[in-house]
Image (cartoon, rainbow, N blue to C red; front, side, top):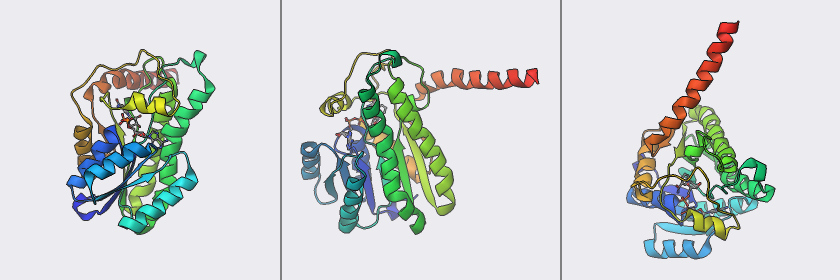
Length: 262
Ligand SMILES: NC(=O)c1ccc[n+]([C@@H]2O[C@H](COP(=O)([O-])OP(=O)(O)OC[C@H]3O[C@@H](n4cnc5c(N)ncnc54)[C@H](O)[C@@H]3O)[C@@H](O)[C@H]2O)c1
């Protein structure tokens, strides 16, 4: 989708980190942006620093009625949404499944997967009717490979976002609507702090990733390019392939064993 022909982007979790990087990339391309976030003070700061092209709306992405209100408000101010970025999310809790606190599991799935699905429920039908638009859903490396202990609940949610996005892409393509899956690796953001604010726990786990030089602004630019090229996957850190390859090799080997036994 050519971003120069778009006028309105709606970005969840846009008051911080990767979401804010995406907001700024959209503003640089001349779009007006609705920034939706649960953190009202952070939202106010971001909006007051950036001026008229940006509007803030306080939204908990778990709240479906909230989505309907946020959409109505956003479209009344800036017109139909061309670009939807379902990015709000929280961090892994660091617990292995045997020690899992079900409340923590439910929170991770409700925000990281349910929040994305709610965004799709709110906007996909109207984009299909208009015959244009693009949806970006933020998953993670952990939405492609669940190879480390302590990240399981998060991986469940993020694999869900991956499945949702791949299915949605097939469904929306004939109607002129693009769908991209954003899979970031480790990026320095406020993720731990935001997670604690929402009552989530953060424990050390085997999946802690090494620091990288990639910034939220870099990811904003990757997302803008990914929308322009209608990329199905926007992968930020190529090292993920090292864990994906053994996974796909094991699946291929399982198929070959079945063929050999037939
Ligand atoms: N930072 C990383 O290393 C990394 C890696 C892979 C994936 N991700 C994913 O990227 C996305 C953005 O995270 P980030 O690292 O920029 O963190 P961040 O904490 O800096 O930004 C996330 C924003 O989402 C908001 N948010 C959280 N729950 C919300 C809810 N229910 N409703 C509305 N807003 C909500 C927070 O208030 C915050 O402003 C998340 O989905 C996260 O899982 C991050």
